[in-house]
Image (cartoon, rainbow, N blue to C red; front, side, top):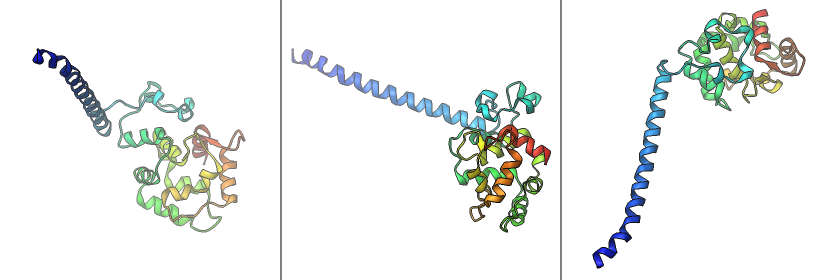
Length: 207
């Protein structure tokens, strides 16, 4: 009788242990799946960035390549960092500088920072020229725009333009109000006080 009475009391314990083990196994499998997906993306063989994966404000129908119109972007060394730049709510400064180092040669960055070290020396056309933005792909321009768009609202605003040089180097200066307004005035085509991705691409191409 005692042995029979003890069996029911042990059943809940065994069921609880089984549930816990099952939950742990599910978590481990999920983590493994995420690691495999991340490894595939880093290798450039994972799912390509679709237009749906890019926030609407970054998609410019007037500037889509044939590949992008099909819904994908070609694999490239910028594959993962482009995804981060377009997706993270905030782009950490250290990661931003790593992405800048992928977009631009070290000498280009140094030359640009030297050119605009003096107060009121900034010229957006020369800025674009030194960095060779006209020669960048649409994907690279979107990535650059998204890095500058630090609050990820889809626009460049005065505060973000002012600290633009500091994204390249933390020791760089802020742009003055005059420099900031000149950049904003040139790029803000619809005069809403901010520069969208379409306006930015037009500004680069017209400079």
